[in-house]
Image (tube, helix red, strand yellow):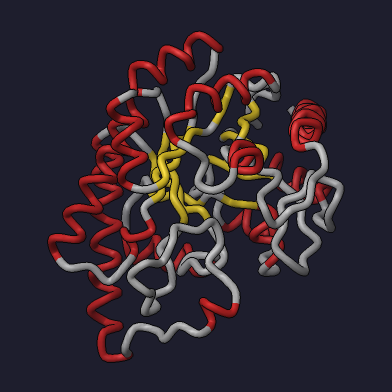
Amino acid sequence: MNNPMDICCAYLYIISRYGYPPPVADTVKHIGAMAALGFSSIELEGIGKENIQYLLRNKTAVRDVLEKHGCSVPVFCVVLPQLGGDLTASERAECLESFEMGCETAKFFGAEGVLDNGPLLPLQYPADMPVMRHYSGAEMDALLPLPASKWEHYWGQLTETYRLACGIASKYGLDYHLHPCEGSLTVSTDSFLFFAEAVGAPNLMFNLDTANQFLIRDNLPLSLIRLKDRIKYIHISDNDGVKAGHFAPGEGNINWEVFFSVLREIDFNGKLAIDVGGAETPIADIDAAYKGTANWLRERVARGG
């Protein structure tokens, strides 16, 4: 398993403190906040085209602050929900251009991979649909799916789009991690493996998110075994299995003894990121939750190292 001190602070910490999306112009301040907690490994995030462009333009200033605080960015989040849509040729080209800007920024920061939610369900979204962390609720349930007659074309285009994106990421020496969230086409182990087989790119990875996977009743230990060649980055948080939430480990119903036993069995040597908080998760002291989870994780990892 990985170095017990190399535990990453996910960007959900910043989102919990400053809302979604947090102001990208405050990225320098965000780095300082995560470093002040004691983390030297952190996520950064470009939410949408304009934020990605901002970080690319200001990449040197951001990297200088990372170096000042002794921080690394193993994974840079490139949030482009439009990438998984039913796109025209020009729309796909524009999305892939933004994705490549994200990959260029990630490479400049020294990241090992980029991350985004998996492609959203092919629904008929309104033109003003906001970027969200979780796509769920009555408003989503009321949306019509893509017409049945368009499915084959959509699936072929979607897998080709992600094949191209994986090629772009590979050009920069990056893995492309898909994060499972409510409303994603690849929310489960089975759905991701089906999609990954269709895309056929060796650098397409699954960002196992313990809380999100537990919520949909994916068996976490079995997922680790089935996805062991597709997992290099894991988001750690707890959940009660009833409603969306990202709590500190021990505050939900995940069996962590079994989880870490299997993590050791598959000889996992990737990164673990603390992903606690969010608007859906009532936590009185978010700083204490991250510090406490970091100590808990270090003990767990060291125990099996």
